[in-house]
Image 1 (cartoon, rainbow, N blue to C red):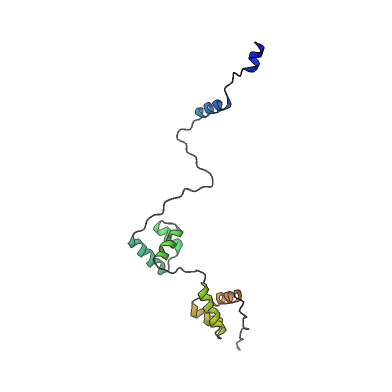
Image 2: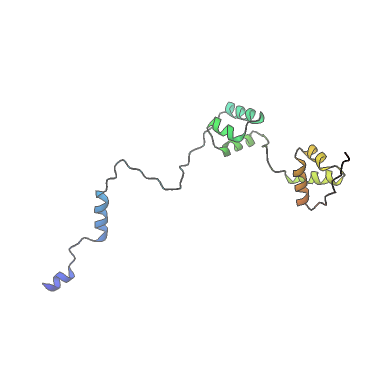
Length: 145
């Protein structure tokens, strides 16, 4: 009898105990979300007229942030729709061909301001890109007052 008591286990296995404890938990009506995760939403479809209105508003000076709020869509969706409509986005870095043109104009003798006016960017932007390309900058001409 002593041996039978030593080798018998009257408590249920751990898995059975865990299942019983889980079933006793008050889980009705509770939903839990993982911390740090956002629920992804499906992008809202825009009609042809909405895309046209979006394009007109952007070309009229509205920002991507304003349009995203106004149309109830994500910033990336605004940018995607505008690019698909053939709209050139503002505040984009110049492409390599534009920088090549800057280099050509500057080495031909134009000032930074004139080069910037021709390509549509600020003179400081022109100077930055020329320096990045290794173009030797001319000294600034001093004006007499």
